[in-house]
Length: 73
Image (tube, rainbow, N blue to C red):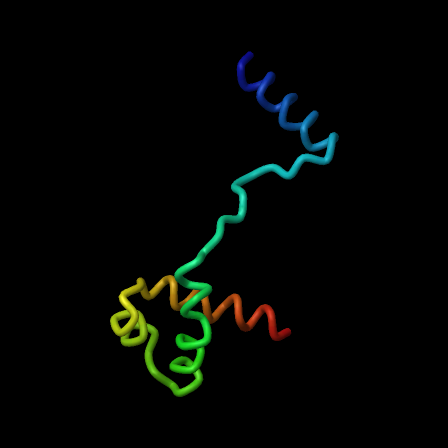
């Protein structure tokens, strides 16, 4: 019964035009480091070494590179 109410509420919100799901957050540190990270990526450095140099995770470096590739296409 609870599941039905939740589903109907989500459907109603979607019908009103609400965006469902997790909201996009701000990434001040990775946005600030993007030009430097991309310079190293283009120079052929590995994501792991870039991450160690900047004190961020390898996944963050991967996401920065993925976002930049998506912007350029």
